[in-house]
Image (tube, rainbow, N blue to C red; front, top):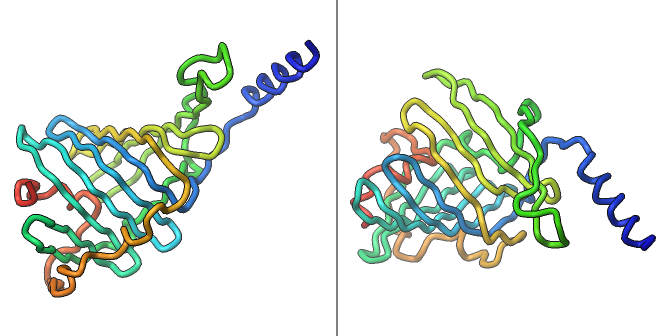
Length: 217
């Protein structure tokens, strides 16, 4: 009985703690789904915040057409590869280095609340999470975002992001493993070695992955 009371006190104490902004572990492997009014996609991703690089392998639907995209974003090098395995071709673009944003809740975020996803009735039945809100000033106005991260470990659960151009984009994260399961994900395939970088083209950003999706279907 004493043990049960002690565990309950510890649980209540954890819930009573004031949530703090946080940053996710620097190395993650997992999956996500992303959607707005025009497209839906599922992706596997590999994330390295230390060397600022991300690999996405996606399949989804855009304006009722299916597509597949394999993209390697190397922010420190300022290069993005869009890889077409079917045709053994690569598109190599300049990438905006400053567009890398670590998975985190920034210090100026506003806490919306702390809840348990699932149930608190028994061990392992629920997940304690915090939901935050913020705004980002841009040349075209103010973008808005809302993100949910776990209280323990600062693991992303979901995120919504709004711009006037894209509307609301919902991203849901799942099956996350802390660490890199395959370091080779951060190296382009051999057939990308001959890809030429167009120095005169406008630098790409994360959303460039979704441009001209039918080319990669």
